[in-house]
Image (cartoon, rainbow, N blue to C red; front, side, top):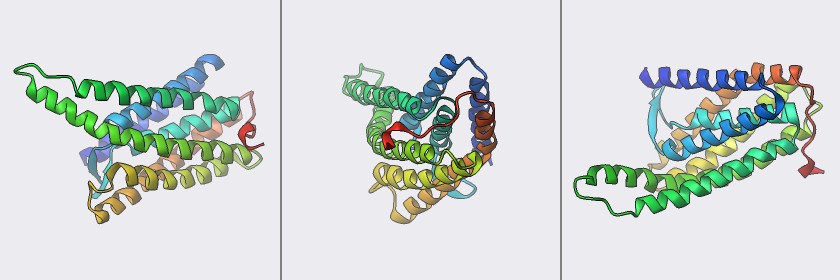
Length: 232
């Protein structure tokens, strides 16, 4: 049950941080929500290739983190509008590029005598991270663009229904893209399919848990949700 307990703890931390951030002044709130997305994407890049057992099913450790990214995007749209949701995108892509370039540079630095074990561990992390970075690039680029566009286009619908439906759809798409790129050829097909389904179930459950948080932000905001200008 250790994985389940730790996953629950991460969920509590993510939701609590989001609630606190939404109570900050607007400018700080927007920056903090963007920073929260960047931190979660960097954590996915570093640890996203690690698989674990959750409720008896194989999945990767980054599912809750990615679900939290979409939660942050929904909060930004509700409070500041669709155009503001584009700000974290540039921050995330810039951060991922830096991780890829600097990580690979570190990986190819020669190790000194006596430090081989540490160097091997670091090299293993960045070897996996490169593939996860590309998976994150593709998955986040496609899923985020669709999420912002569709979520904004449905601004006249009840916020709880809109967020739950769009988040679930985007989580399914993300699972297919991210797992396909990150683990294809590294994990047996049957295990990969199980990981995809489990990952989707975890992210969808997180979305349902955060529906009240998104509804609270939508109720309290002075900036009503507006359709993303990219779709006009």
